[in-house]
Length: 138
Image (cartoon, rainbow, N blue to C red; front, side, top):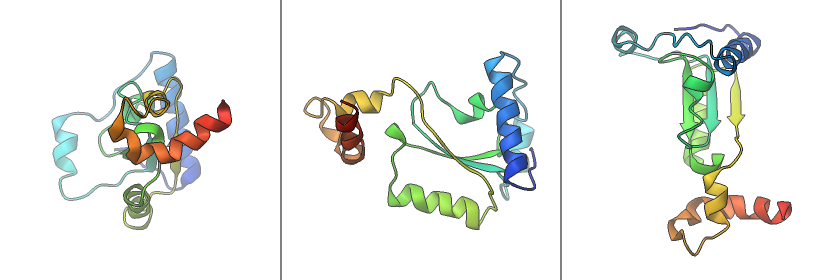
């Protein structure tokens, strides 16, 4: 499990991990059973990540970190809700996270689905936040 004493250290760990991912030099740290079981009684993530639920953008892989290093909240379109905000607040106030990263990506399926809400009626839970952005970009 990686440690960061402040947000600058946490940011540096994420940048280094992302560079390794980009260069194809990932180390896949601390992803074994021993690490998972060692954290049974508590977690100490060094950063919180709000990202899209897109299967191609997995924060632990993109930042080359292990189990317990990140507190991740993933939701299609990277939209906010009371539950997401409460989760991030918990990461900061209870777990001591000093860095929050909001991570977007290109070619988001949630945005595409919101462009045709009649085809995807269950997307309404997030579309009210994304449609104004789509309209502004058109």
